[in-house]
Image 1 (cartoon, helix red, strand yellow):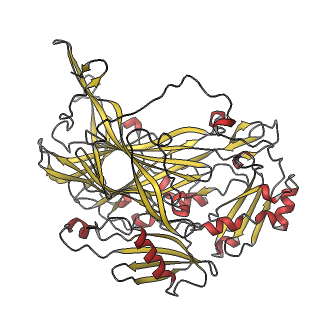
Image 2 (tube, rainbow, N blue to C red):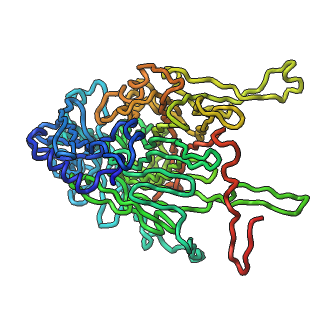
Image 3 (cartoon, helix red, strand yellow):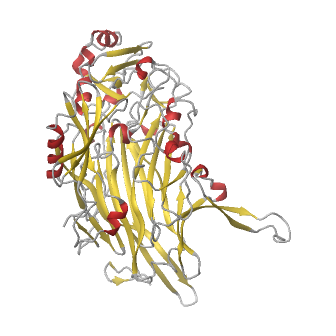
Length: 639
């Protein structure tokens, strides 16, 4: 029996694509961009039981007519293979197509581009790699107002297979290209800078002598892992959830619940959790960089850019993988093998106390369930690691690696104020990475409210005679206009998602606590192109009333959108947030002022947040975790 939230099968993808492709309703030269499950209504899913008929299976199929550049959005009913809706989205553009990427590789043969390359000493077009970036949107540029489907293409040089093109940028040359016709709409050709002469490689044979003192590290679970994966339902100890891959959002969780033996029931925590957008704004005003602020989710697709994972490289231990049926960037249905990695790992101490009176230590090891995937977008790699803990906590850790984007400089020249020299002839521009995660929280049910909690010192007076008193001060976020919030580590600020209808043993409403890590906000000016298009990145937390159509922080189609879509439009309704179904949007990220140590490949940098039980349980829920027995010559235990 199929679950209503099961992702499309390969057969369903093929059928939906065929229905749309043969309909004659999507233009002269249609190209399939993506296909994904059109999720049934939340209330229908929650009420559904396995013995009942499943809700209708629907897939959304997004296509682009390359003859007209029009984007079409169709919904296919798989129960009878019919198109329920089909609409052209005038002035709205779907994410990048693989054919558009491939077509741009012909740009070095364009006469104007070839002449610009020759002025930089590059005469062989076969050694030029072209990277067509999303074109963004800038007020005052006539072609941006034209609704043409555009890209901004930059150029790199590589000589041999295995060379990293990112190490030889062609600086000061940017082609604005019509993705449908291939026409170079504008060629930006600043003062030429020599192309760096050396291609960098990062394979073991090219990196020089490797360390010889690294002993093998093996993780063995002789009885296998403690979790089970049946279809897309994952169960581990007291946790249960459904996992899938979405072409745009990447890893998606549904119906995350905790089986609480004290309460005697399975308790819902999250109905749906997934990334809602990310943006990488660059802070260099040079013509090579000022326009760069790609929305890697909405303009490319995290699921479309996901990697097949490998044991010992991306995951270590007793691994179970989840494959993902997808529409590839070539528009063809297929299977991405090993798209998601699932494993358990030791995470140091869960809880511990040394009883010095009895000379006894009680200690428990913290074991966590890890569900992860990696996506590569151009020069950067992003890993998304969701952690589920035995004490009921949930974490997201985003890992950033890959190769920093660079621009060429004159050898020996100092770095600009907006970049860091990483070699004598290259600098990496300052930039930021922001990730917005949409959390459809149902803390013990859908009736929730959001409380902002600041730890606050008590002013001097009769209530604070010794000057040491402080207490939490709680502010209820009552409307969406009040729910655009920033972290404040000086006040230990956090947010509680509270269910007033369920009380714990102390008579208080049950809750989970959202704790954001140290994170910047967007530095670009609010009236800048990226400021208008990525408004979500000016705050760490937004809250909206639940609406199943509101899933993307910058709108569903950010490509060449002037801004204002997504969270700004959602929150303009100023809906009530008290004792209702609410959605929390969390933004985390990093400001990357590059270091020489980030080149030629960047060590992992991390950002993320935690959801921590806060009165959800009546006591420590990990008291029933058994002590760990270790075989090391003789049996021993942690108590």
